[in-house]
Image (cartoon, rainbow, N blue to C red; front, side):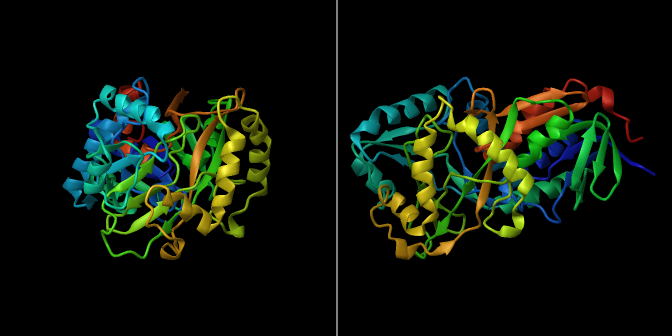
Length: 407
C-alpha cells in the first residue's frame, strides 16, 4: 500500500522539523511525515553552525529576519528550557577595528532599537569589564540576549517533540522527484502528500523547480570553516563580533563561546564548487559543479555586492594561520598556535537571484500547487526556526482543506 500523509516535509534539518512541529501543534489530528535523506539528524547545516542564539539587531526593520529572529530567540530559549537543552547566556559584544566603522556601529544600534531588541552602547572601559579579551576603537555594542546552545542537541530534541506529537521522521529517505500530491524516493517508494513543504536546504531550489517555483533562483554554496582553541573553559566569556560589511550577507570572522565554554574562531564564507563541499573528494558532484559554474558568472557581475573583494578576503582563509589572525583584530591575545583543532565545516545554502546576480539577504518563501517552498533560510534561520515555522504555517491557506488525506 502506498504511504500517504496530510503533510510531507522534505528535509529534516531544524527548519523542516520546526515546520512539522508547528503543523502538528495547530493540526494535531493530521498525519505528518518528515523525509530526511541521511540516516541521522543534524548532519548538515543544522548541526554544523555555531549554535549562536542571535538577538536580531543586524537586520533592517522591514525584513522577516528582524521580526523572526527577535521572536525566535525567545521561543528557542523557551523550547530549550522545556526540553532540557543547555543554553549558555554569554551575551555578545560588537567591536570596531577603526574609527571609520563607528557610523556602521551606530546603524546597528538604531536597528536594534527599531526591532525592539535590547542593546547597549558601551565604551572601551565597559567593554573590558564585560570581556577583557576584546578590543575596540572608541565604542562597542553589548547584546545581553545573545547566547549559545548545542545545535545538534536542539535538532535531536525537536525531532523528539515531532515524534511525541504524532509525527513520523523517515531517515534514509532521499527524495528524487516530486509533483503536486506525489513524492518519489530513491528506493522507488511513492508517497501521497496532501501538502508538501520544501525545507531541503542546499537542494531547496531543485525541489522547488520540480513544481515550477522559484525558477529565477539558484543555490550558491559557501563553505564555513571553524577552529577551536585550547584555552581553559570560559577564558572567553562573550561572543566577539566585528562590524559586518552591509554589502554581503555574512557577519565576518568572529569569536564565539560554545555551550561547553570553548573558544571558537570562524566561520569563513568561501565560495564552494558543489553543495556538500565538506572538504572530502567523495562528496564531489560533477553535475553540481557544472550548475555552480554556470551561476557564478552572474554573481561575479553583480552590482549588489563587492564580489571580488569577498573572494580576495575569503580564499586566503583556507589557511589556518591567516583565518585565526583575522580574529586577532578583535581580541589581541589570539594566537594561531592556540587554535589548532579544526571544527566540522559547514556549507551555507545561499540563494542567488540569477537575473540580477543578487544574493538574497532575507528569508524567501514561495508557494506552488499543494506546496510551500522555503528557498532561502540562511542565518539566523537556526535561531529563528520556531518563529519562522509559525510564520510559514500560518500563511498556508489550505491547511483546513487537506486534513484527512491519509485517512
